[in-house]
Every structure is written in structure tokens, then in C-alpha cells.
Length: 230
Image (tube, rainbow, N blue to C red; front, side, top):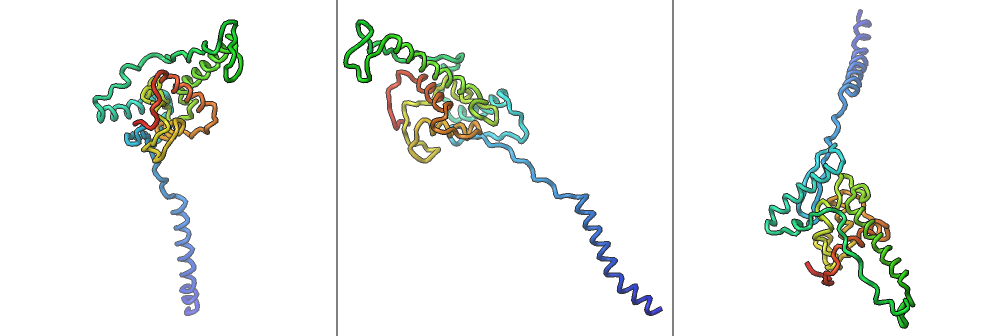
């Protein structure tokens, strides 16, 4: 009898261990740790201060992007009630001024002696005009297209800058507070792509970047160069 009791006592720790271990394994498999909550997306306006939060899972669409842009601009207007720069430029796209007239490189007979880069014909001048207009139109297309810009939230540049208003390319290069250094226009374009549009920065020679710069400069034709101006 004593031997039987001893055997029972000695077997209890092992049985309890198996029982406890089995319960622990059962708990692990049936009650997994809760998944971390998904984070929303913070969108920052070009001023580096105005922000809105997009909830996780929000649908990416132009309508959604416009809603985000409208929310940002609503906040901005509340802080700048006297700023009406965009009221007069909300018009149909594209409204692009013509490029400079290069007829001065021609002379009687279609040629002019002494031109720095050679002698040019009317056909040359027409070709230049068509090429620059093509580049401007491509820039306008990209400026208005969230997909072409790589936006992950459906926003495009025109939603805050209709017809490239308030971009002031004639003031670059200048010290830009958001970047903390002297920047070129393309640097600020990339900052806007990364922050308001939540996209990926373009390289300097990306055809899209070259087209965007061309379009923005075209929209400010006639403005005097004033680098460094804020």
C-alpha cells in the first residue's frame, strides 16, 4: 500500500506539468495576441504646418483626394482670411500662355548672320515652339493627374494650386523653411509630392519632373525674376 501511494505522489508533478502545459498551449492557440491598430495617414500642406488625418483603409480616388485638399485649404484659409490668390485662377484646364516669340533670330530671306548658335529658318522656330508647347502640355497633364504624380491618396497638384497658382517659380532658388536649406523649384516640387501627395520623390532627370517644371514656369510667364523672395 505504501509503495502504491508513493508511486502516486511521485507521478503527480509530471501529470500536473502535462496538464498545465496542455492548458497553456490550448490558451495560446485559441487566444492570439490582438493585432496592433492600423495607423492613419497624416497629410501636410505645402506650408509644412496645416495637417489632416486620413483614416486607415480610406479609398484612393480623385474625389477622396479632392476632399483631403479641400480640408487642408479650408484650414489654411481660416488662418489667412485675406488671401484670395486662387479665387481668380479657378478656371478650366489647361490655360497656357504661348511661349516667347523667336522671330528675332530670323532676317530677310529666313536667315540672319551672326546668330550665336547658327543660322535658323522659320521651320526651326516653328519646331522649337511645338516642342516647348508639347512639354508644357505634358506638365499640365501630370500636374492634374494623381496617378502620374504617384500620389497614394488620390491628390494632385492642381487641387491646391489651380493652374499652378501660388507656386512662384521666379523666386527660386531660395531658402525654404520646410526643407531648412536653399532649394530649387524641383526640390519644392518633390517636397510636395512626398508630403501633401504622399508619393515618392522624383529624380532630377525624371521626364515628369522636367515637364512639371516647364508647365509651372510657363504659367508664370512675364513675371520678373526675383530669386530668394518670400
